[in-house]
Image (cartoon, rainbow, N blue to C red; front, side, top):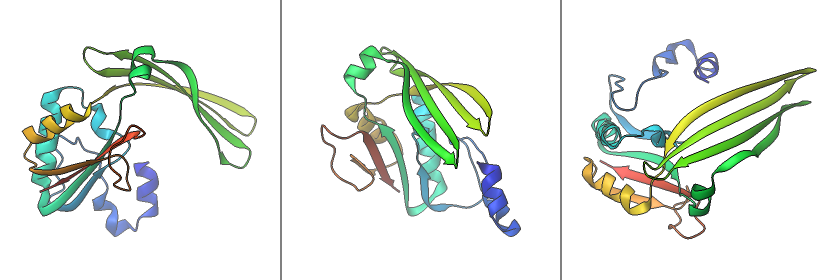
Length: 181
């Protein structure tokens, strides 16, 4: 994705693109807004890493700056049963070429960690491809998330049920966290 982004940017803007660790990144300047979508924060398994990341992001913001990130709201039934080769996405990425994503999830309820396997099957013309990605994601409950934020340097935060800033409800699929410095 970074290669595609860099190819689309004017050469003088390439300095703005980098891949760094959320726990210690440094671009040499401060930000008004830092956005970590697609559940990036959930890949920090250990509490110490979560606090380090929150505090580091805080330090990288200008006064009054905002950090926004999202997490999924855990579904207890899904946590207890997991998933086994569930087709959760299918689409055409260019005419005649389709991609399918199958997900397997085994959950460690004591450590609150999802062990995910995603299998991607796609075609390009007559050629078929398949690739497997394994990852771990830490899941959070609301009050635990609030406590974590309270332990960080952030003193102002809100947790919403979606990106339209609707309140959390039983129908919410996501926590959208907005932190202000």
